[in-house]
Amino acid sequence: MADEKRPEIKREPEYTIKFIPPQGGDVKNIHLSAQALKIGAVSLAAGALLFVGAFSYAVYSTFAVRSGASEVRELREVNKIQQEQLLNLSKKANALQEQMDQLRQIENDLRRMSGAAPAKDSDAQAPSSPAADGNGGDGTHDGQGGPIVQPDFNNVGQVLDLVEQGLAVRRQSLLELKQQLQARQDMMGTSSLNDLGMPGGTVPAIWPARGDVSSPYGLRWNGSDFHPGIDIANDMGTPIVATADGIVTTAGWNSGGYGNMVDIDHGNGIMTRYGHAMQVAVVAGQHVRRGQVIAYMGSTGFSTGPHVHYEVRINGTPVNPSTYLH
Image (tube, rainbow, N blue to C red):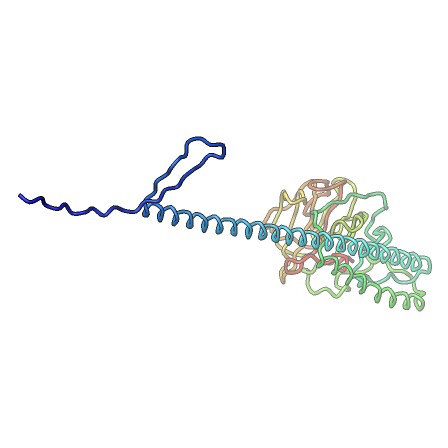
């Protein structure tokens, strides 16, 4: 029998990697097939791509974080500067308001000394001396209070507008003073509510209590606080009356700084508020008349002494109550 030739098996080529020690020794060989070498090369390339991508993302994230932090720091710095500018403006507005009050007091003194008629309170400035203006204060009470409201551009601008209006009115009033040599009338004793030109009884038109104006409407405490009403201070238990006809909407404790508080809705968007009472004498839903006792003066809530915090709000916005005091 003839010998049959066996088919030759084609062997896959191999590659050998030799590791030769620098100081002699055994040479180590690693044998790799072509397929294994290809897989290794592909894995190495893929790893390199992943490393480059991760490194690029890390660099991008670092720069993005640094850029965002820089923007936050810049915004904080700008906000700090704006707050400092607002505080300075608030202090200047407060100083102007105090000067206007002093000017008004000087005019009142001159009018009393000359026997001239009282100045018109249309300048929207709070009376500096309520005892002189017929509210029965003796200058010995100084209780203050009310909610803590940080000054902003709106209420600081409102105060500046009031000062600007006050300057014009004071100028006109002083010119009239030169021509007035008639006897001074007692506004609380001789003027009736009908003489004030107020329609009906739903417009605030009288003082809510007798006493001293211890804190006016507007900026106070060197411009660090905006006061949305006026504080009238007197002895504990002094009666507080409604300044116009209306419906009691709130009667009781207020946790926002007013203490025992009464709110009265007078219709047409007009509302009055009376805070820090020792005791409330009405209930929500009750109809009250102008001059009716609604509470008794106290020092509840944010308060330094017995007084009533009085606000007039038009459509929810506080306005200067002094324009409604007669």
